[in-house]
Image (cartoon, rainbow, N blue to C red; front, side, top):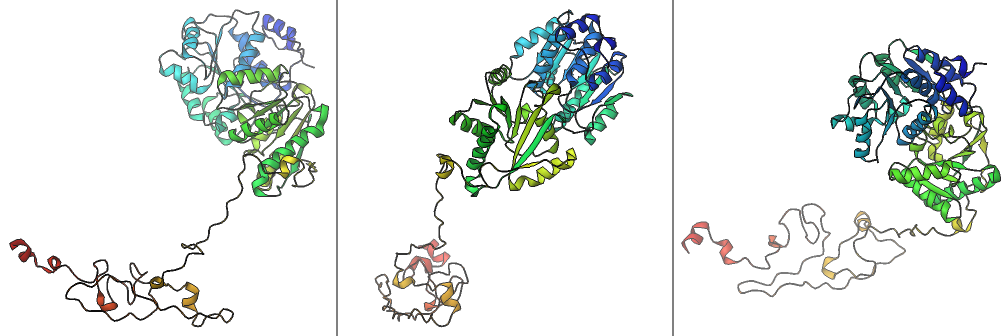
Length: 513
């Protein structure tokens, strides 16, 4: 078996590795470290939790052991998709470089620019950052990338998912052509393949496992769930989650619960806390200080349940996570591999459980196609979609009763129609005779409500009751044909029973008067 002492690492780096308790490298480390020490580009493909971080940190430290940093010109660059992953890489550098006189800077969002500028001005050997914050410093004129000797892109497939590929290409163009590039990813999408062909020169390809496979130490399962009512789906799904946690008992020492949406992360965390579970949320909309405190509490064992979005699917290195619960089936099949990779790390056993509702079955099929195995089905501990608790039996506090459906009628049922505005319904127009079950009543004699007649006008004959035409503008309330006139002696609607004399005057008469 290969040991770290066989990999030609710097003696001071080997001493730090031994003090950390590691003796033998993982397959990705054993395959990536030798070509990296030779100065070759490396393309590393391995499933999550296999030690890819140390696979590039250890050779970088050995290569940077000689030399000195200059102000605003870092000697090496590590790009990470999330703040949490960048912070984890920084911790690895602290662990393995404690016997070397190397400096580092962590450039991530949510931290003051002023403090980061001070570190850059002093000169750093290792710059660990997210793409957005790196470009912010560059555009402000605080950073030069012409001195980069080694560049690392970590979790490249996650970069693709988050839309960072244009930023990555721009950063590549700002670094020297002679740089050494270490490129690590869990999957190789076509876009990632294009970038490696463009920016890597004859890389040593190290692929220690089939792409997008989960560790064999993780026990996977899924519960197919259908709610009793559509409006009860969220509540019953949270009931099912708690039932699954309770069924694991003491074996569930801690767990990460993944949701697809940030809103659901907050809702699930709030529900768990309400029912006495020690839980806290983490997602991209929270302040960086709050995210850091939550992660620290989870790592130290002070927090049992971490409810997270996919921002935590990459970069969370908590070795003793016993369970991963997928409250939602991930939309992208690759994300499932990264989510469940938070458990079963470093050779430990882990358990991954998922809830699948009917509309997510297509995503479940895509996951099983990707990992090339069927995920075992579990029985619903709630016995189907029926509620199993008082919360499920009673309406939730935040759910309002359904409003009664409104009818299409514009008139209230108990409102009597005016005698002069008796408009026949559509059914009456289509039927020549009334229904036999309801004899028609004799209509009351209608009285025409008219304005008082003016001088020079004659009484009009009463109008005959004729079906009103629906054609023409303003058909309601008119008889005869459509348009503005027709029927009832073509009287002008809206001017009463006479026409004012000034309207009948010609233009010349009005001008002369």
